[in-house]
Length: 86
Image 1 (cartoon, one colour):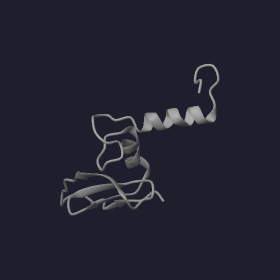
Image 2: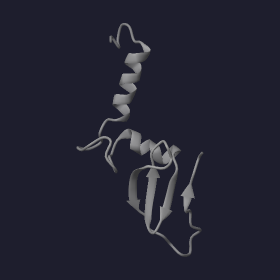
Image 3: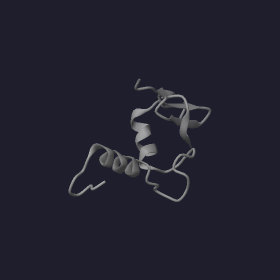
């Protein structure tokens, strides 16, 4: 693979995957709550839901959890309980 002089689809795909899976901190790139570019983008496009004070952002299959976070609620606000861009 020569990304500079002769980029091809395989090389460009490998580069894109490496960027998406680049850790923002130390740890396992595929673990729950991994801080990667891929996991950050999941909140923009994949299904997410808030239940019992926990936000769950799903992987690309919209069923397996990619990461979770504590969600603070306010009884005076209109609650958002789910986002599903499917």
